[in-house]
Image (tube, rainbow, N blue to C red):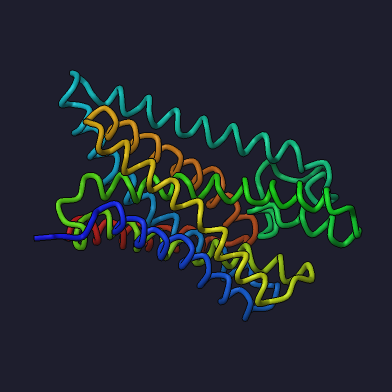
Length: 288
C-alpha cells in the first residue's frame, strides 16, 4: 500500500524531471563546442517521437475514455481541448516571436523561415545575447531575460501538465503512466537544456552560471504538474480538459517548434529516422 502523499511525490518527481533534465542537458551542453547543431537536432527529433507516442497513444486515449463517461461522442470534447491547447501555445509563441524577430539581424532577414532555424532561437537566447553584446541597459537585459523565460515556460508548463494529468490517471505512483511520462519528459529536457546552455555560453556567460540558469529553466514544469494533477482530480471533465489541453500543447511544441527546427538546423533525413525511433520506443513503453 502506498503511503506517500501523492502531491509531494509528484512534486519531487517533477522537479527531477524538469530542473534535473534541463540541468543535465545544460551540463552536457557546457562540455560541447557551440557547433553542436547535429547532436541537438537528432536528440530533439528523437524526443519528439517519444512525446508523440505518449500523447497520441496514451494521453488522448485516456482523455476520450474520461469524456465518454460524461457525454456521448466524448471525442468532440477532447478535440476541443486539443485545439485550445494548440491555439494558446501557438498564440503566445507568435506574440513572443513578433516582439523579438525584428530586433535580431538573423531573424529579421527577409529570407528567414517562419519558424526557428538555429539553436539560439529555440528559447530566444539570441535576443538576450544581442543585448549583452551591445552592452545595453540593465532594463533591456531584464526584458530579454523575461522573454527568454516566457519562451521556455511555454514548453515546460504543458510538459508539466502531462506529468500531473498522467499521475492523476495512474493506478500506481511508482509504476504507472505518470512515472513513465516523468522519465520521458526528463529525457526530452536534456536536449532542450543543451539548447539553452550552448548559446548562453557562446554569448559569453560563464559555464557554471549557464548550467545553473539552465536548471532553473526547468522549474515551470512544476507549476504545470500541479495544475494537471488538480484538474485530473476534480472529475472526468477536468481530467479530459487537462489531458486534451496538455496533449494539444505538446503536439504543437513537437510539430510546430521542435521538428521544423530539427530539420532546419541539421538539413538531413536523419532527424526523420530519429523521430521514428523515438516513436517506436514510446509505443514499446506504453504497450509492454
